[in-house]
Image (tube, rainbow over all chains, first blue to last red; front, side):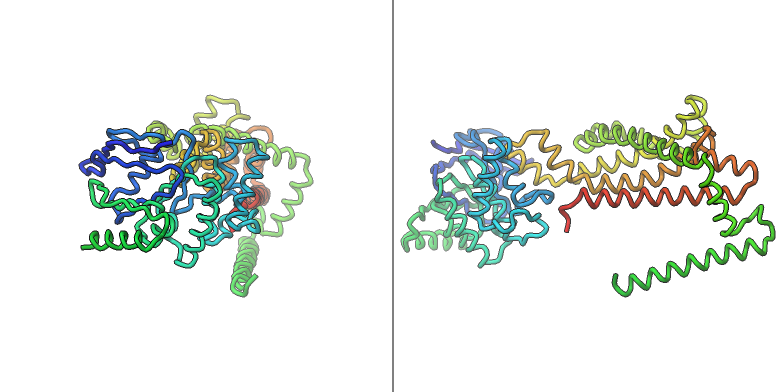
Length: 229
Length: 251
């Protein structure tokens, strides 16, 4: 399966965010869109998720099977328990008992089995983010989108959650596209990092970091150095 | 109960006792139990009323009228409030109607209703008209203040319209709905009684007040008023109790 943005243009009023933007994603791997705030990363993600549609150009291969999302503000339902939240998107896709089993499995994987019957108001910020991760992975999609999902967490908690994210991801190696302006997060999670810069959005450099070798770290350091100049 | 809330209750209690004592003293100094009865006379009348067979019929039918008015108002409020919250064009269409109803004096509506409806229906109609705009506006606001992030999340997860309505919009409007119910029942209860005073159906708290007034039985008028206040307070408690049971997710 190939995931492709082809020649996409998008403007909001006078402001052109994308101008003939083209990008290939590798299916089954984690791609990071890295760039400064306000450069248009989120617009790109919204296009992929189908929240906004492009003025011209083509999106190929996205969204046919449903998309899972992990947002910065978690977007879990305050009136449903942890279990209810993870089951929420599953109920349209599978019978209730299977939804229940699936939800419980992923709740266990994010380490919230003790909190299963708790409401979000009883959870910490990190726990809520775990709920939204469990919901995303439990949902039978081929693609997971994340928008600055870990920005509000302190470093220790963030690494903790990133590690469990990778752990669960290894189960079925879904395509993940995520947006961040946090280089730590990009390196830890991203197997491909696409460095983006200003409007209209341009790819500055694309780096594969799958092996986390010093070579790829060096490449990233070089890109950052050039970007910051 | 902490110290300051205990102290505040004592203060409230003292004020009530002072007012009741003042009322009794005023009534004694006025020297006409007929025109200004004291609390003791009122209590005596209250027990007199409760013993009469007309008491339960009147109390029951007034509550029944209020309930019917409320149910009709509620159904209309849901049917109009939800689409209005989702679509500002629909809201703009209903806004003038709601504003007109809200700013028309209840008495004017009663006078017209007396011409158009049977006396039994007038209090119900008045109750409906008082409660309907309050409920509608609250539901509209609840829909509008629903977190758009949650709606977007639901769309991304391909969740159908009925479940978005039931599992996202409905719980979001509940707090608004209960505050609307509490306000509208407070106003509605009083207007049903006003409607009864003016339309004079056979039974009803308002009818009984009107009767007592025409025979200059002041202590009975006050006793019926007391009954109306107590029932209104009981509704308020009931609404809060149901709200607590319905909104369980808040800490």
